[in-house]
Image 1 (cartoon, rainbow, N blue to C red):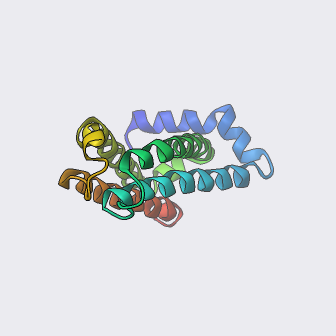
Image 2: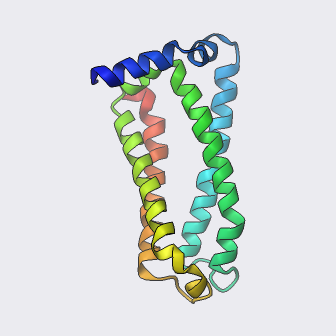
Length: 164
């Protein structure tokens, strides 16, 4: 690990948050439960959007309606998962960062975020025009496949953290 990164992780681990998460009885379990629920909200709603982008349910629900209803759920899930994830990381930051799965999880999180940003700033901007189309544009479907792949990888890498 690089010295600057290692120092930042040690500071995080020594912080009041890290100390509290390590020492307060059931706090780690509560945070882990909230983290899983946040991930469920985030990835469940993202996968529903991705499935719609891939054409599932296109005769039933418009793309604009899908996004309008599910994006707020994505945001709640993301905020919950991010806050609880940082709190959980603070408890054992140096040990988690030393895991072989840590760079994969971080890299896939960045890839998923970049894919979402590219979609919303690119193909997704024209959604009003193609929102009622029988099939979303090719690049919207590619973004959906990339999203499903990246988020599946994030979950897998997260599960592998204690084992690598």
